[in-house]
Length: 434
Image 1 (cartoon, rainbow, N blue to C red):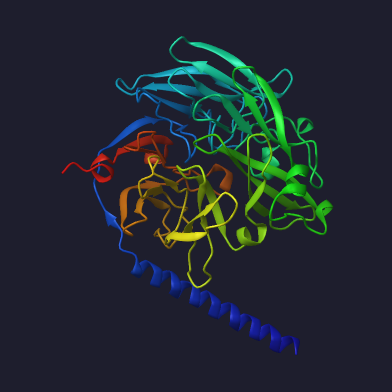
Image 2: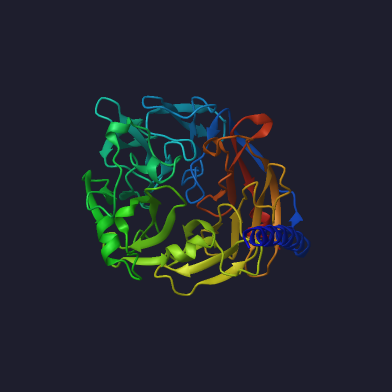
């Protein structure tokens, strides 16, 4: 009986692999992406990255780029390692070192990002005398800076508030997005603790408050995220993102099994005062396959890659309301790090992971995809090499993002095996002149 079952299992695994390959080939045949040529300029190169797919490194005036230079890329940072926050003059290309940051990781650097205008440039740092994670507010116009208490994953679009999960503990949720400190200054959270959560900092008063603990989220989220055995998991908040109107916050609630195994993830939204907590995507929905969510311009809806149709071999690009309602597919296949046009036009920019073979050739080169969710058009404006690494922590993600005007797309590149940043001008596509 056991031998028969083993043979049957092998047969089923074989057929599953064949079917998967067939469906991927069918998906490739059904797509009709169009490669187009747009003006592309190299912004900077030499171990340099921009932050993420939901903030623009181009300043609100369009005069400067705010970037991060890693000190190395062949090993993971240790406590006390520092990188450089760079200000690049768009007109001359000259780069100025704004400051050193001890608060960075491989994927988003020091979370360098702009506030309300060119007078507000924020980035993470760590005080190595206390190992406190802080935020630095730098004014490029006056060259003055001040430290803010509390950690930042994203600043509000008007520069008035910062929001963050615990960036010192972020490593336990997922490496690459927080700050590095000695292990003694991190905490493993057994169960849904009341000692950590989502933090909001008032930029004017420099006051930081925990608006919702992990325990609050566990107890109050609708639909409920409660499980029978919460003490068998470590709980962390991961990423904390303002909507454009800074009226709601989105975060991921991450559960890691203490005995090993795959993590669980739920997408949570709440108001800035910690009320009205919703589970927008449950752990069961996320477990089917999904990644990389972002607020849409209306501040009410969210986009992400998510499996909502098991009959399709790749994830769908979907949208849904902050409370999880109105879930629908808007484009297929989804991939990478999608974000909608900031002015509400029906365009989405995204990249892909090399493993997402529904949109890549599997050779380590990924497309910069411009998708029209209204017409179904798919335009390829560039192709980017990615770092071939054994440790996924050192991967290069393109993280394409819109500038605030919606004319430019900025993304990470790897030309010649060197990390850098490029910018594409898509005005004639987005705002065609008749």
